[in-house]
Image (cartoon, rainbow, N blue to C red; front, side, top):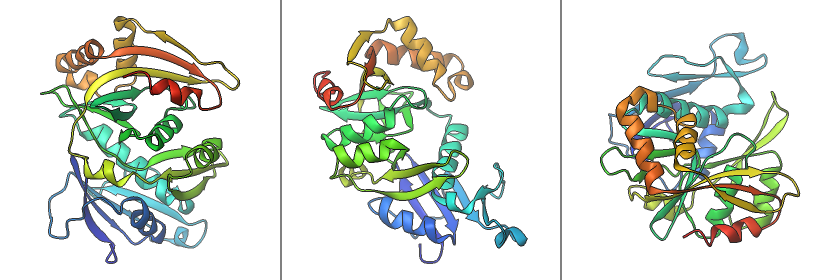
Length: 287
């Protein structure tokens, strides 16, 4: 990492990152410390490079460029968004290229061998719930991806840092003070603070240990809302999974089969909730 080039195993993927950006180096020292580095590796799933432009932009309103295999898929990002650029860029790499598995946009946590998928639109609270459940002893599988193995139907972990933004940062720091939160930056487009929860070392150590799907939860946060959970019929669950899948249509019939398999294996529940810890107590009862 001191040389600005390293290989890192993250769940089922190997990442090769080249960068000289200090903010990214600091982020890796804190948030990816538990992940195994492989100095002798030469092959990787994703060869990523993040650097400054080689023109006046280097000094005037500094920006950063993201490259995958020397291809630049994004417009330049503000320099202060270095950490989100890497995290979002890696999400893009996985969602756009890992078509050997079914990919669903969801946070995933596990307890007693069964996984809970938190599936929701932005502002539904899934990342906040994911972090708070980690503090209660749930194992982190992912904050972004439910990766369904086509052979077994199991969920493959990729326990990367959990993304927080806005008021969710203070909620997590208040209700889960044992979690380490860092990588702070401000998104200038939304004028909103961002931060990332460090993955627990045990989750990283077990990142090659799959989990069986157990329950699908579709959370919806509403201020001052009383807790309410309602069952979701399998047909609606499949439709919602398809809406939140990155690639089921690319997989064709196999993708549809895996969506149906997931709906068959899992109970599905809509969850409405407000402030407080009552919702966390509810999660303790689902398995």
